Length: 264
Image 1 (tube, rainbow, N blue to C red):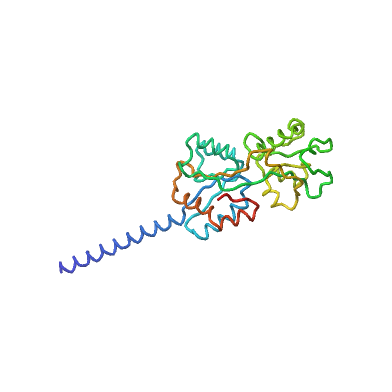
Image 2: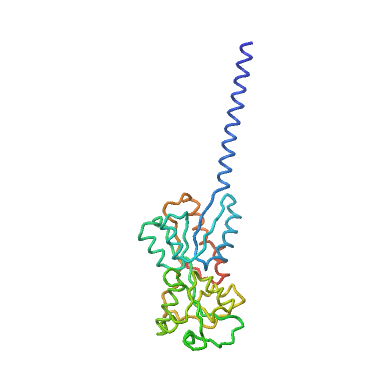
C-alpha cells in the first residue's frame, strides 16, 4: 500500500512540474509577443515610417512599434528629460549632435540614412503667381508659413535660405510659425497662409498644394536625416534590428516612394 502511495505522489509531482514548466514557457512567449519598441521620429517621416513599421511588424509579429512624431527639437528635449524612447530619427544633425554631446545615444549606433530637399509651396488653387523665394517680399504676400526655427529643422533651413537671399527680415514681418513641418503644410493646404517652406517629401503627400520653387543647395546646409539608438533603451536587440531594417532594400523602396533619397 505504501509503495502505491509513493508512486501516486511521484506521478503527481511530475504532473505539477510539467504544468509549471509549460506555464512559464507560455508566459515567456506572451511577454515576447507584447514587446514594444518606442520610436521618436521627425514629423516629415510620418507616412514613410508608418508603412515601414507595418512591413517590419509583419516580419516580426512579436514586436509592436509605438511612434512619437513631432519636431526634432521637441523630441530631443523629451529624450533629454527621460521620455521613453528606444530609437530617434531626426530631420537634422543639430538635435542628434546635442544628444550625442550629452551622452544620450548608444555609442556606435548613429548613422545618416536619408536626404531631402527644401521647397516653397502655395495652395493648389493660389492665384498670387508666386514662383520664387524672392516673391515672399511682395506686398500681396501677407502670410508666410515657416517652421519655428528654434526647434523645427525645416524652420532652421528656411532661415538659412532667406538669409542667403538677403530677405530674412522682410519675410519675418509676415511669418507665421508652425510647431512642426506638418503644421506648416496644413496652413498652406487650408490657404491660411499664402505660401510656406517645407520638405519636398511633405509637399509630395498632398494634392492641396503645389511646389513653385526648390531651394538651391548652396543656400542651406544639406538636409540629412540621422538615426541612433537612445541610451538606456530596454530593448537594445530589437532597436538594433529595426535600425538595420531601415537600411534594407525593402525599407529603402518605401522611403524613395515618398521622395526621400537614401544614403548608402
